[in-house]
Amino acid sequence: MPSGGRLSIAGHLILERFSLSRPGFQQYRGLTAKAVQCSHGTAHPATRRGGRPVTLSAGATGSPGPLSPPAPVNQYDFDFSPSLVAQRPPEVRGTGRDDAKLLVLDRRSGLVEHRRFRDLGSYLSPGDALVLNNARVVPSLLRGEDGRGGPVVVNLFSPMDDGTWHCLVLPASAGAPGKVLRFGADGAVTGTLLGEDGAGVWRIRLDPGGTDVLDEIGEIAYPDYLVERPIDPGHYQTVFATRPGATLFPSAGRHFTSAMLDELRNRGVAVVEVTHFIAARWQHGYLRDWLGDEVDWPEDADIELTPGAAAPSLPFPRPERYEVSTRAADEINERRRAGGRVVVCGTSALRALETVTDERGGRVWPGSGWTNLIIGPGHRPRSCDSFLTNFHLPRSSELRLTAAFTGRQPLLDLYREEVIPNGYLFNEFGDSMLII
Image (cartoon, rainbow, N blue to C red; front, side, top):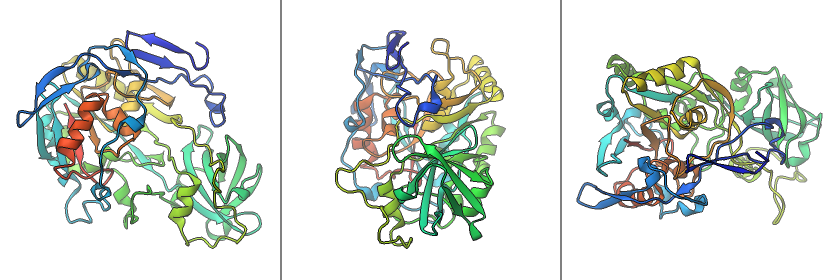
């Protein structure tokens, strides 16, 4: 299939090979990405609490509908108050991780229930499988010096197979092939810029390498909507995070406690772990604003982007690393074969599983590599039966992915009629939703 070509599969799926010749993608040549198109099939009525009708799109109920162009994220908009973004973790607010609110949507009946996250177990049965992303967030913001002693900030955003990283460099003048940057006490850690993969996107090799050194010299790059940085970096990790490499938080699993997971295992629910390293999406403007006056930039440092100037190119969706082990794939397949349900926690875990799931039989295959899978309405998820996720901001790719389970308009109606009026909090320190 030629670059950029499309192939119709099963009447409603599209496989698309992204153009991997553009800057930033050369190292992924040969990767086939899957892009899911929107579907507007016939809807069926359902009943929601309070007697309000709700309709789910054909893609949400499993029957393929006619193809239409994919809806851009700007079609996933709704009135939103920034006050609904949880700024502090529940531990700081005096509650526990599992005390978050849980909205439960039954897709068949349209029933909406309002519970607590600790009640999740009442929706899982012995023989079911719960799939989690065990990726651990690494400190990806590095402050150091360039070869002349001037300040430099490097933001790592994606680990590569050979141990190098893709990164942004600030100020831009500090970026040059072969340039050696120094980090940590006495410059003990060096970073060599190997080359540019797209405008402003550099590949860097750290010495010593590995992720352990990042704990010594780096800071976690928190998202720009958090006004305050968490006092405890552990608040920005799940309790089961064991595989370092993510630069964005797989936050849907944050609500779980170790005791809660143990209880599920004791009840016969398989807790299955996969790995998906979510890559950061920050640009120079974000780095500049986030750092503020903390860095003593020289007067001639080019940290401002003049109107019309090209910002660093961060291709999206960027390929991200994933791994589904043989053990994980076998557990999921065996549970489903025996009649159990598969509940996937989080958009990243879902993207990893869907990447390795057979398009017809729904079998999950073990595998590792890179994926830039896009999921949205029209794609009936084959790897799972239920989906656990947080509440997502307007116009976000995560919101579009969630709509694969409900359809676009029903999801927007749910946000407008249930989520926002009931004060559910958004993003990593907020509340949760289970779609069954």
